[in-house]
Amino acid sequence: NAGVTQTPKFRILKIGQSMTLQCTQDMNHNYMYWYRQDPGMGLKLIYYSVGAGITDKGEVPNGYNVSRSTTEDFPLRLELAAPSQTSVYFCASSYSAGANTGELFFGEGSRLTVL
Amino acid sequence: AQTVTQSQPEMSVQEAETVTLSCTYDTSENNYYLFWYKQPPSRQMILVIRQEAYKQQNATENRFSVNFQKAAKSFSLKISDSQLGDTAMYFCAFMKRVSGTYKYIFGTGTRLKVLA
Image 1 (cartoon, rainbow over the protein chains, first blue to last red):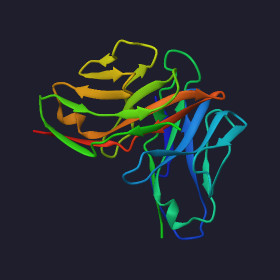
Image 2 (image 1 turned 90 degrees about the vertical axis):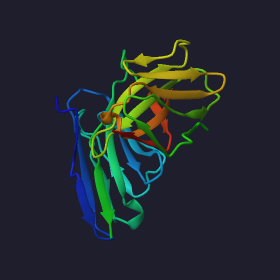
Image 3 (image 1 turned 135 degrees about the vertical axis):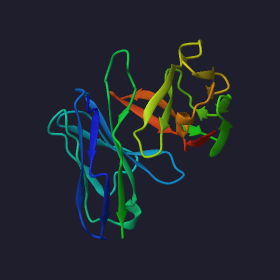
Image 4 (image 1 turned 180 degrees about the horizontal axis):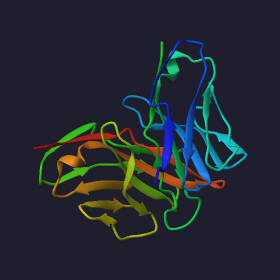
């Protein structure tokens, strides 16, 4: 079982560059999320999706975009990278109902540095 | 707005001993879930234990148990017989259902080191 897979694991960007963090899950979860984790802080929600074709903003969406064309994939796009986007990014997914309601399944994280 | 507070940034415990990690939260909701997640060094975050707010009985998963005090809005995690593999960052999280999805609020984490 692959679970939630994120790529790349590490990336260094220059200010103003753009990139896409890939996320795919093989658990047929409807709900998917992107979080960022800054040192000494809890996870902050960037964007989320409740199903293919449906996305919505979280707490800190500025500078990011997402799409959800399939149930499995939920890429996060960074446009015009800024030093403030230096962080560790986590993709997660969850069931929408059932006994495991609410449990988040996380990817391994992507460490992004913007210089 | 909901908040989750973990007041212990770092803790250490001797192998085989017991340690308790603290978590308090603030909410006006009555129906919600609470979670403890474990993030080992350079590895994925995984669920340790969950508690539904409507259940009075404290959740238990092998060596992990919680002390859920709903009125006090407290949700501590007890790890018994600590093992070296328990070394990790532990996050407390509050979750409620909002407009067809789940809204999570995470604490800032407690870094636990188990000493040999």
